[in-house]
Length: 127
Image (cartoon, rainbow, N blue to C red; front, side):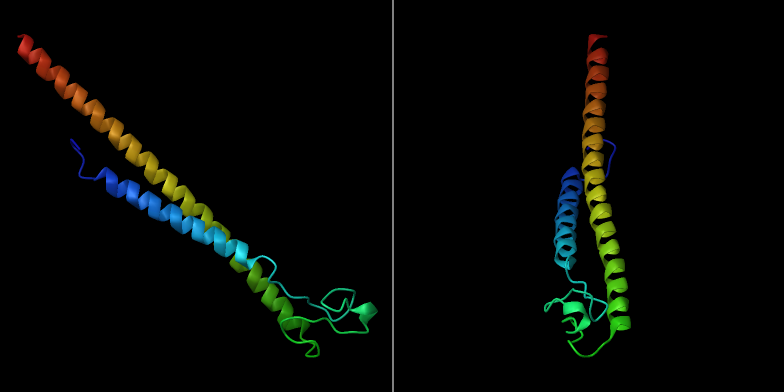
């Protein structure tokens, strides 16, 4: 490229790698869905349905451990992780698109510069 010390293919390769990373973050985000756990023991949710509080809810902390505070802390942490992974996916995707746009702009600037040089050379030859 005239006037630039950037290899356009490097920019495009980086953009592609970031797009792959964004897709991996999206896959991770989808994998987090549905991994929350019931917080209370009863109330009609869980594997056995809770049957009006008669059967404890089946969750990651066991059917009889009665740890709603731990389940709530897990769910709170999970929500934060989901938010961060979603931000990671979005910013990585945005960066990928930005690098592709930079490559396009560099390519256009390089082409404009070459045309300018060619016009200047043609003007000198005419004299």
